[in-house]
Picture (tube, rainbow, N blue to C red):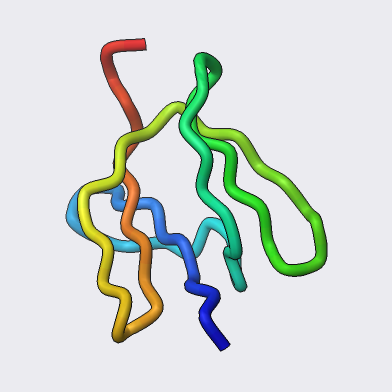
Length: 65
């Protein structure tokens, strides 16, 4: 499988945000994350790390917005 889990980094700790992410689409409202079942979440955040071999996407909240 090619999907990854998305984590939100808070105070140096990574908290699971969405499992089995298939798509990440940047937009005006923030990042749209969609899992393999079609569930979607939008978050105003930036990608700080993509660890594709480990199937991890690490996000940090965008404090500017």
